[in-house]
Amino acid sequence: MSFEYHNLRSGTAASDDQFAQAVLEGLSRQPKCLPSWLIFDDRGSEIFTEITKLEGYHPAQCEFEIFRSHTQTVTDLVSKGSFTVVELGAGDGRKTMVLLEHFIQSRLKFDYIPIDISEGAIKNLVSFLESTFSGSEMSVRGLAADYFDGLAAIGGNENQRNIVLFLGSTIGNMKIAEAEQFLRKLNEALNSGDYVMIGFDLMKHPKILYAAYNDPTGVFETFNLHLLDVINDRLGADFIKRHYVQQGQYNPRTHAVESYIFSTREQVVSIEALDSEFYFAAWEAMQTEHSYKYTQHEIETLAAHSGYEVVKHLFDANHYFMDSIWEVKK
Image (cartoon, rainbow, N blue to C red):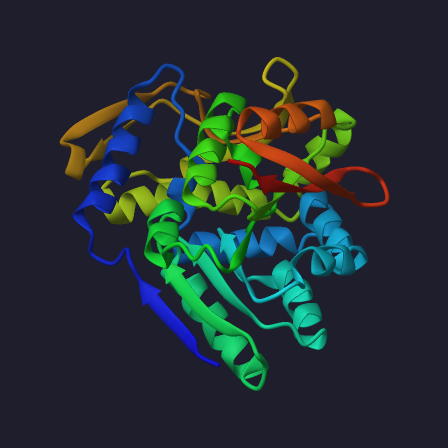
């Protein structure tokens, strides 16, 4: 079996232009708002991995519980013939490892294709898998790529079923209309009969949500403020990180936990690559994350509107989180 790594992102002008445009648009808005994907360079991915290990960060802990409790359910779905596991936003692959190990123990023949925008995360994951599972029937092809560029590079094989994993409540970073658009595009990239398994953080007590996104050790603040380092490095900005603080809060109007960076003083930031300056008032807020919290009804409606049929909902013991398995219908 083979263990391969391919970088589809290095040195691409399109990627640099997309980053610069997102920063320009976000800082030009009132109120200012930057998309969270900007944070995920190699260091940003490392910090987010630290977040997933926090005891109080329930989305990760609940999803681990689901994977440990329901591996056989997933195995029963895909065990008829060879199949491909495609993971969007794989990161370090820790949760998925629970599934992969069970597939290997069940002597299933399958390919694993992790896709992530972080080159370092994919390199490390492929290296770890090769050192751990080199004697198995699993083949691995890691792709450092945007989601749909990675899916296009894989190519379609109608004779082999895909199961696409989109875990960790990443879908919650999108507004519902954006999520539906994303899922329709994903549907178009897949074959009828393929499966998708999507992680949804469910609506719950706002105090539980607040605690999950405001850890006392400050890892969430480190993660959000890393965005300023990334913009400084990539666009020649002069953000002074110590002049900003971060906090997350649940917004009942948007049904999302929103993270904000607050400017602690009046200041002007210059960004060389944009040939622009941006004014921050004292205690002005800039949104950096949006994590929508779903109800089960919303999840089922989203599946139906996006061209899927719900196969199974998998819950943790507290029903804080759901991994929902859908089948592509065309």
